[in-house]
Image (cartoon, rainbow, N blue to C red; front, side, top):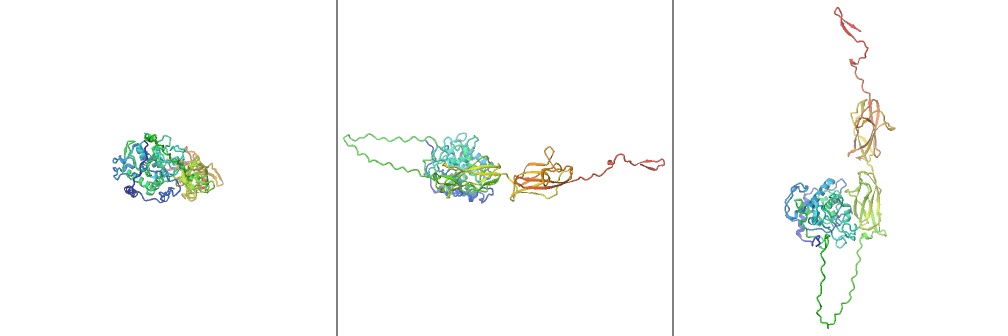
Length: 592
């Protein structure tokens, strides 16, 4: 028998009240809302508006806003275990609902630990993954997974054909959901295929990204929630992230209820023994089944033999009926897209490590050139580059606005220089892509200055007391990690390295008058090694140059060492020396 996603939604004031109380309790425990994070992250003002679609145009639903379980946690919380958020404290015991299947619980905790290392500013608690996993699939159908975390049967949401749900045409040729006409949410965290394509992760190290594997799905969900650097320790960041997973206020309230419940303590239960939810948000138990074999069809009803005497004339046959007219499937905005056009994107150039000043905009149009709204456009970064969109992703799906324009998230350059491409395509329809060329240039400085003002002097054969330190800036801002070269040049007009005068030392102690592969630190500072002087007296020049053309020339002075003071032992040989000897009369004579 098929395992159903749920039965009819249970409505009532009790559920609403419990959810509201849980949300209020969680909000009271959060830090004050963040209005600007200063690091390119999104703030409360950027959050999607619940139930009304994305305020930014970014595809704000991992699940395609598919149905979810509406069951709420019991009023009696499990035994408190404050250390549970780190996974280091004793396991809690208590209500059956507090139990999480062992493998599923392990996947949630490992995903959160991974995100703590890769995106520490997100502050993602594993209990949030558990809350979403509970609401989306009842913890993989009560932990119905094998030892590797793969669900024993695929978990599929209802067909997203517009019949009570979103209308999302097939994007994966049925590879993940088995449907070549429309998409369906897949796996224990219920990703739609087009989102899994870029959000998918390998959470168990087996080399595959499988939405039906709880380790892969939990890690992917964590990265999805953290993709805009939202801070889960703030109420605003938490709300933005949850609504981006499924854009519904009721969904947010339900998830937060379970989050608060799990934060008070959970306990591990054997795989396959978790409590299964009963109620689903669409009030329809007909969809969202696993791929288990369907029940056998009901056998046809049989008609008993006629008891009418043979002499009775046959009944008049019923009038012929006209078969009902078939209604052609409704077309979607995506079906009307004929081509993509650039929507005025400027030249894309950025310095390594910096954000691109311009964003990519693409317009979807009909054959006649009319704009098409509410179409999903996928932006993909291709080429040998470490550039990413905001949040560290290489792929982003964006919904076109009323002008038919999809604007990609901001691009951020990595450390690799050179050109790469961003390709825009329509999700669910094959039309020619639009490609955008982007270039990353090396980190640069346009100004250099010494941090000190003391004269740099030394005597022949000695060493300079002060080391040369310079600060690099670019357009007045700190220029960090900029490549630099230091050379003791022959003269102001001759940049060749000098063959005499001050010098640096290499590892073996040999004189070196050119240093390459230098780089400013995070504060734009560069401190050169100690300088030494040979036996040449004079004024010499040290020139420091950086990527970007900044140049600074520093003057070095070498003076003669002072003459040593003569001592008796320094008297030249052969010089007569005075001596005294007694005379016979006892007087002293002086000899020469």
